[in-house]
Image (cartoon, rainbow, N blue to C red; front, side, top):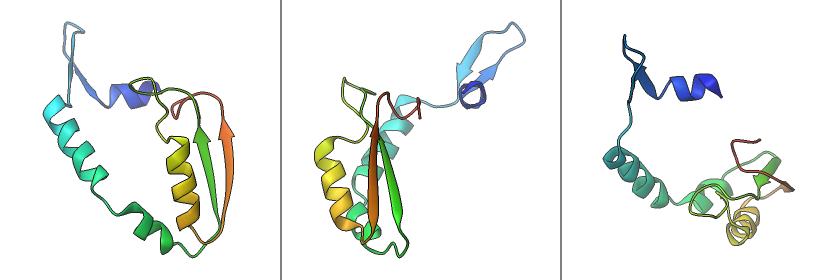
Length: 92
């Protein structure tokens, strides 16, 4: 995880840090991702899929992938197995 966090910051000579990301860019990406037709992409998957879902809270007190979306996702994949686990997606 350390390399993940180091990739997001610039470390100055005085050891202070500055984030490479900003809220504007994060929101643009979040909106763009939410507008993608994910179930249509999933319908094209030809191989068996293992969906591992971390059920713990991530942001705003909810998991990254809520149970209703798990059901919708699995329904759109031709061949899939599902496993849930405690924790959030970073704990995986």
